[in-house]
Image 1 (cartoon, rainbow, N blue to C red):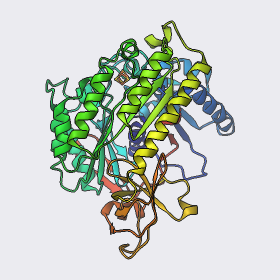
Image 2 (image 1 turned 120 degrees about the horizontal axis):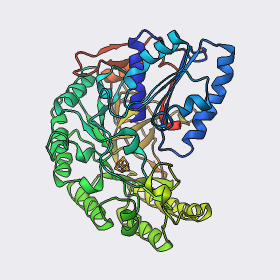
Image 3 (image 1 turned 90 degrees about the vertical axis):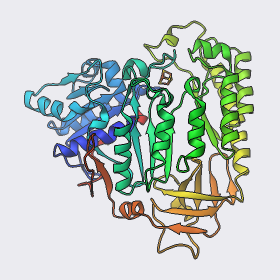
Length: 480
Ligand code: SF4
């Protein structure tokens, strides 16, 4: 969500006439888009601001803006702790950034503007997309749940849904520019429609994406097990361009802990959803999120998590050690666990999941996979002479881009087919000749350094062109 917000920030700045600083060039404006979900977000933000202070001393006209979840949380405290910051804006008013920069420059003082409710749906703002072949499309923002460990509802507010027509218009606009894959984004995609009174809106939306010509892959994140209904499984199974990939957050396998987390499903229901998904789509890759060491978690609770993990056979899992988020109910709970207990459980969980991921990945060896070739997914690609891409089920595959099937050269954004030759716990390798290679418009655009720029909704027509330079000094939030 934050990465996509950063695309909106970049789009707005471009629209306001800003030009991105080239690599190595000193920027006049630096925007930090922060996340409050990650541990140590505060330390990272203030560490980064400390580094920028020296830059600003050398270049007093430089402007520094801080936005996103941490800004929404810390508000005016940011300029108290770092008085060299020029602009602070929150999650509800990312559209104000150019005006606030202007005002701060004009008044020569810091501008702090935090709103309590959404001012404009971020999708109404222009966006400079990061990728020529894959695009994020928000279907909702905010969340009506109250998970006790989560800071999101207090920083992103209640759920607001976009109308299906607007979502589809944005999907179509991206596809018209060559984008092959969209990921529908929402804090809880299954409750999509709550605002306009249609409980089955998400399944219908998936089916509608199925009729967008040229759209090859549809993904979504994240569903919530409590609200996950059979019509969504049917829509996934029956809509050919919806990928058989599901990220289903478990958080804990202990019903007692799920209750304390205020997650309204229980482990049995969770596993029954997975059974239904696999019955409908035997090739589905299911991933999850798990928190270890929630306050009051006993060894027995943790064993229950391990047991659910054994039964669920996730293809991979994002595992987290619980740490307090000030402002959340769980931060006040008794029974906070010592770090060494959490670490020891965490290590056992990671070891078990790695073993399962590896076993599941080994089942892929010898299979033919279709890959959307990606940029920046393989750290060792240069030294191994491989390229990387995502299979339809989301698995990362490093492949050798050679063979008679190759049409000129394989580029990010192209589609290739190959056979998996080796499995590691977190990736696959395909070292044989390619079985097929399809050059795409996304590949042409990626090769030319062009990325889509979508106008805000009701979208109008997107423009497509080479951005003046790589995206400005806009930092994505996830590192913060
Ligand atoms: S469903 Fe729970 S964890 Fe997810 S955003 Fe909402 S409150 Fe947070």
